[in-house]
Image (cartoon, rainbow, N blue to C red; front, side, top):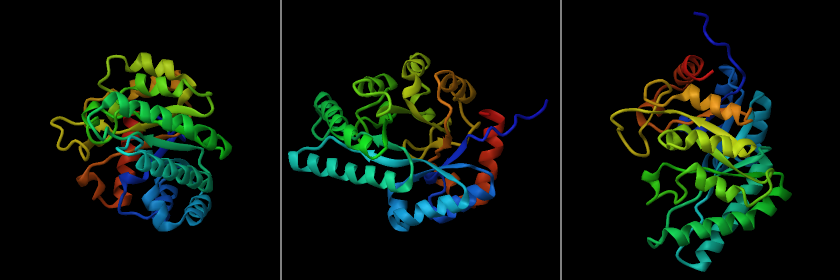
Length: 274
């Protein structure tokens, strides 16, 4: 059988190679023909916004997204305001990098009140969306697997994320589809179709059994149970034609020599996703 051809959409999320600086990561992508990279704010802060943008541009690698904004629910009005202001800075960083997508990981409830926390998320997105639009940045609400509801996000399904996004113009607020977080959902394919052109990003990884860790348990593409090609076909069918970022949090995988890891990622992407 003829192997699938590279489709030009493969991207690397920087946290898959966390020991690399922004400069090292974009150079690694260039060496391996990976055309897109999703950056993280802490790494950008270490390297500098302008320097990060320049390094990516010089390497010929497009910055597909910036992670993360969000973390909206808070116990006090002052803390909520601080988080809104931090998200304004994240929007400005995204603009400075030249990416049009800020990924929102929405945050947990501070006081066990999930309904109130979800209202805080909705209100924060509504406040930030106009400013993001002024900056040419879209807000992508990323639902996380329900096991993270207590400590990372009260938005746990694509349906919830789409319900928030649909309150806003199409070009302002959308959703992120991450295989690790959505594969289990019986409604995932219906919700991908519903999201349609509001899909602002697609992250791939795998769910291995047994899961070695909740946060750092993502598997290498092809090592787990997720129907990755079917998810990719569904996302494509909904109208998404953008980068496909490999985002793997796994201590053993993250500790691999970077070039070896990128070679393996490309091999697995071609075998299981492209």
